[in-house]
Length: 579
Image (tube, rainbow, N blue to C red):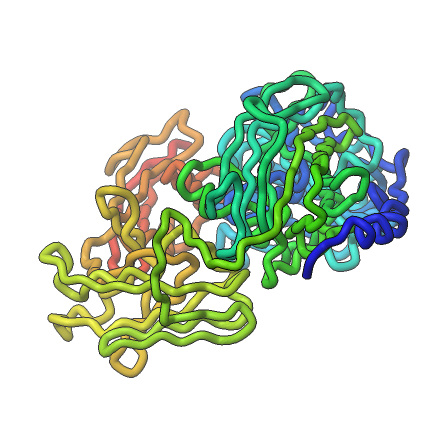
């Protein structure tokens, strides 16, 4: 589809009615969840690894234990405790149709702590997902419900705070609800990339992306070395941009991006809300190949055919542009944060008629026999491997690449290179490998692993036997092998030893680690009865907090740790709890 300026201006008359439009969210229903000035280390919709950030991160300046307050009247509808993810999290349902979420808590208030601990002992599990009756924990606005912490996958003390639509549990940008956050700083635009679309397109005479340095600061940015780009054929754009708020130097996500050709809006997206089912589409919104090489996230205008993200609006021809009138046109980017602060990038685009000769980047033309479609299941097979890509796992048509090679380092299979890590997968794909040189007695110890980094570090993805194949579901392209794990996990006591008198001690701690398959389970008992140990995997730390359940005098402690291949380690000790 070619874009004419006439069609763009006709569409713009309709589009501009909804530019920047958003629902009328209540601005006075909620108070801040903390009693200090809110500085943010993360914003809603921020681009993260394999997901969009679903809330806002409120800095606690390295401290834990700060009181957290219910933002409005309601009741505790859910309490979740897990080793990763949100760690200790509490959910409050409000009568206005929204639910507030407080994650990475250090602990809850006493009444909730007692309830959670009782349920953990009933289930004999640290990890619980509880849905108490709404009459059990009613809360009033401003009531303390928990204390801030660093639990779960948090990489530093903070409060991860969310507001969700209760129906469907859809996260909404908390900054749209009138919460007081100081922000008078405009977004920064760091770089521009212009991409050719297809093999007939040229940018400055080349069929490859061109990265352009920018100049400017504050509201206005421009190309550093030139104002006009020469293009032929279809192109699309991408920018690196971030926002900063008052009182914090963190590089946060922006709220919205709009692109205009002259005065016509041709692309926009805004981070108002999104369902969790769409979160992984972040890998299609960005230039994933560029990110895999440079660790910089470029937000591109091109909406791939397998990208069903709902944050887009007012986008012409899926963000691909071809001007056919042989004139010079002004391209304008407008980037805003949730407070309305905006920055603008302007540059000129001079088009010429497209070439009718297919041109390839760097002059290379490769024949690709294996084409995977995004809208169908794709299966690739060799004598020793079968790889299945389900429908919806790809964002666009893929020219699939595969190679295999023997290696003295890996004796149970060849090294299978399944495409490369420059392309993302939206869904897990089924990888089946026929092993070699296996021993029957170790059959349950084999697994499929991905090779990572320059040193080919093994990262286990698991594996089950199926018709002579070792089978696993993989979440990324890359190189895979079959490995074996017969080594049990390591258990290292931190603050105890056999026969220790624990007078004056309020906890028992262990470091536990596993070299390949990973920790799958652990079970601790005191005198044969299960006891609650909190698992903090990011610090490899298991903690038992001595409480009223602990018997005075001599006690027999036992800890069993199992990895993903069933290898088991046991630690036992007599411990003395003084009267």
